[in-house]
Image (cartoon, rainbow, N blue to C red; front, top):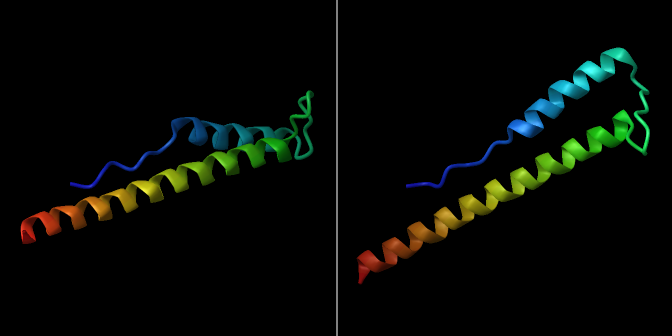
Length: 74
């Protein structure tokens, strides 16, 4: 049985939030170094980490199934 892949409600909310902020001003600067570009970069980094996590889960599933097959062969 494959492991459940993870999704992120926080990333989804951030994507909606940035769409709204872009409608206000495409070059919005919220202070403390948080600009829309920086926020988009943070979202992309979170997406990449989520993709990497889900890829590792897939690799674990493959290794697990191979182990089960080897056990059955014995």
